[in-house]
Image (cartoon, one colour):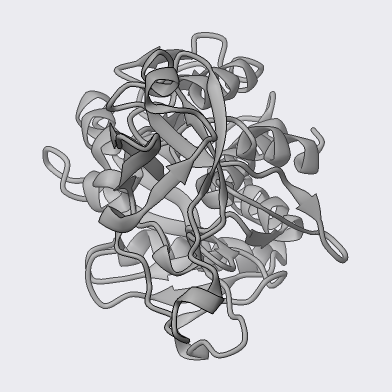
Amino acid sequence: MNIKKTVTALAEAVGASGSEKCAAELALSMLREYCSDAEIINGNVIGRFGAYKDGLPLLVLDAHIDQIGFIVTYITEEGFVKVGNIGGIDRRLLPAQSVVIHGKRDIKGVICSVPPHLTNGGSEVLEINDVAIDTGMTKYELEKLVSAGDSITFDVTCHELIGSRITGGALDDRCGVASVLYALEILKEKPTEYNVIVIFSTQEEVGERGAKIGAFEINPDIAIAVDVSFAYAIGENESKCGYLGKGPMIGISPSLSREISDRLFVTAKNAEIPYQTEVMNGLTSTNADRYSVNRCGAKTCTVSIPLRNMHTPVEVIDLADVESTAKLLAEFIKES
């Protein structure tokens, strides 16, 4: 498995929350190499890995397949497309960004930007209600192709940086999906300590909705939510961040299972896999929050890939962390 190609293909697939079909179908095709029965159920991509064995606990590997984006609200008389946000858009960087409107066909546009000469030196952050997209079309032309409710994503592709780092949009959380797939590649034809189900869940960016219904349906004993977390960049609080290239971030939180966290630490140490600790003082704002309170609850932990510039078109990861995350998951799951 070529991790770079897998991450890039997944990250460049379209799939804003609520409109994940394209990204989900790509992930499904990849997952079926390891889970022949994989299918899309209520939007989620779900597959059982290996043969079911009586008496083994059921473990879920979860990574979300959706991405942040926008939704069309209306078209102005002048032909500008007005939008609402899907997920936590970083509004500071919106002016002059290139986007794609996914209507009856894809339409490229740019978010309007007031020239600095006309702002009197102001640098106010756009409110989402002030965002307008210019496609060059008239209202009459747009209404033939674009409808209220159509999704919009940043028009961005992945690019290589120095070493094993890459930048792009939707690396949150397509790199997590890739790490789960690579873990299955490592585990292929090896005995496991658990019955394993994989779920690439939808609508995480709007409230972990896909994980909520997936957790109820699967009802696992143990769940590991594979997501991204903050990687340190200049000007940030180092105590709240991990570091690119230093391995997955294993979560500790009062809302998580300390038993699973500790077992992941031991696994990483024994296998000499680099890792970092992520301490959270409450909920994790990941799909782990849904699994831990599902039905009677599941022993849940987060394993996160460090990522810079979260929720922007220029997210940055180190592919070495994706690989280390996969190795940690595989070591945790395989039969000792």
